[in-house]
Length: 409
Image 1 (cartoon, rainbow, N blue to C red):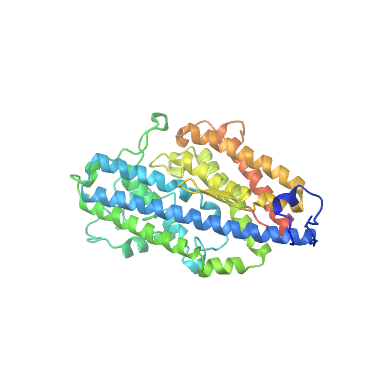
Image 2 (cartoon, helix red, strand yellow; image 1 turned 45 degrees about the vertical axis):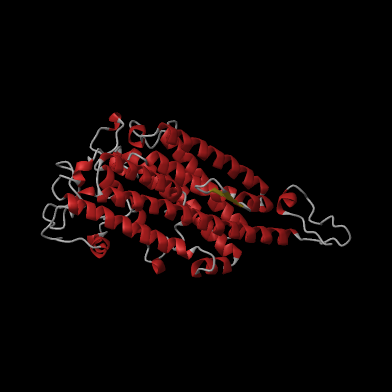
């Protein structure tokens, strides 16, 4: 009976010849590496599928909670809807590394759906009332404040909300997605960061306040759009789906380039830069990712976990079961063990630093007094490690495939 040495054994052995009973098979190092690349890519695809399935399921739970709330609004149902939103963000936050390579989430061929799902920061004044003197809409714009503009929008439809999002090429004109729903549930966070409070929208905004019925309709439609768009992304990663099939048919180097482009850009660009440094520089809670719910500390942790899942080849589903297989570190170890050790250390450091941020909560409070050039405080210290990790991920890609990866966004 022939035997082939497993990957884990090969990683600890300098030999690539099996110890079979009677008919050994010699495996070249090149073959071992190519096999590891193949199993790394297939494990990545399985993780992506499981992750999006979780995100969709939890977002459907959010839809159920919101439908119950708008049917009979009260404080308890609003609290349940808010918790469902927070729960839905846990798996979705771990999908963020699947971006930046024109896949189903942000590719032009798929309608760049990410902008519908998770666009931010948004100008909340476009959607509903805000405190006097806030919001960036021009007063002369008759599309200002959709909920309360009965003349311009006597009725809401999903098409209207879709068409309005990003109008006038203004990226802050976001009318749908997680953060539009977040604003409708929590309201504007008009409190000082030191108060450590999220938005304080009362449930009576949906019962007795002017245009409460329109507010409910908007919330329900925005949630329907979110579920539809997330379903479209999720379907592309299911077994037999066109994109998944095409992805698995790529040369393994091309597939790995895409995987590490997403991870590197999230680490060194989007997360560390747009979502953390910008908030530190501007010292403005409007620049934090989930500014209405004060959930940005979890966004940061989960986005970093998204990258770490790829590095370690593992994803823990919402129900606690684990999807695991060949990791980036295993492949990199076969090609350049020293780089793998360095990346292991950096990845561990990143997760430790973002856990500090997650545990401290209230990101808008944490950034007070931090400056871009002081890396000794928690936020910028995490930024520095994320930037380092992004550069090392790009280098890992070059080491494995020979191709250059741009880690900047």
